Image (cartoon, rainbow, N blue to C red; front, side, top):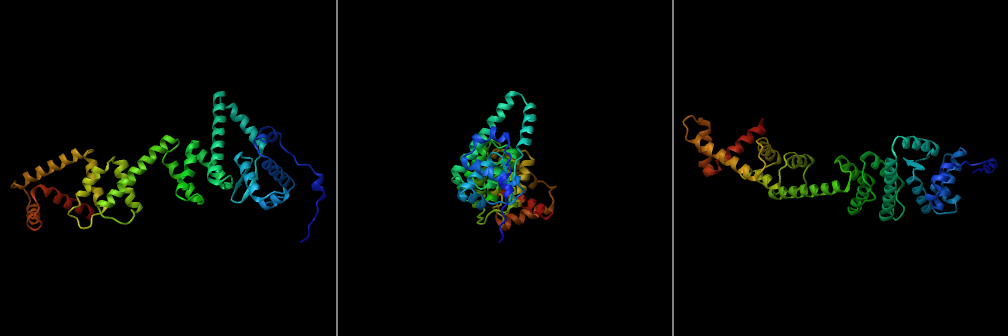
Length: 337
């Protein structure tokens, strides 16, 4: 391998922005400053290829220290590392942009923005120290910044994302961590109070699913379709488990009850604006009374008579349970349609 010694490189100058000296140099460690200068020198003189190992060699350091230094630089948005590419931020452009943005807000807004930035920087440092022992992957810095802007998370929520992943042993899985952020963001979570409410609803849903599986003797996990049905009962219909359990009891004469059948029962109760166990029991009693009156009416159809006569003869069904038999027939016909 031939090595060309470029004398002009050592006789040239590396320009360092006054913005860096004024606004950033006191916020960086010595390693981060030296690393930034090496990056500037490399980029300004046309060599766009450099890696952690080379930086460590040039600074007579180790790769772990260089990773920390790059993390510092990315945290302050002095560099951006994405998909294996490293870009140095244009500090003059950022300063001009900041100047015009500052003029667009009043003084109180400026103070609030500075406070927000400070809080975010603090929480990122805590995440780095707590979960990664000071060597958090560079990609996470970009993701955290994306979450702040995309979902408007408060700092405590971002910390909770990593806490959740760590608790499940998935901290090394970036896709899993990002999935938590996306799920919380889509759920409209922004602050810790909303996150706490989300957890309560999650635990409630988890408990209801467990009880449903237990009552129906289902051993396997629910499919996404089944979970969607349960979510509808809880979120859209606003039904608690005591009401859902009433619907489960309607399947007592069904050989292989399924959630689609139960969904039709709950859909019927929802459409009739039934929201309590007492209302549903009253609804059933009224239905039974109507069936009793019709059973003694001469205008009753022969088909209905035959069905009830056979049901009572073959199944020995008490009069008070005729509601359930008619309901089974009704919903069975609904499924066939």
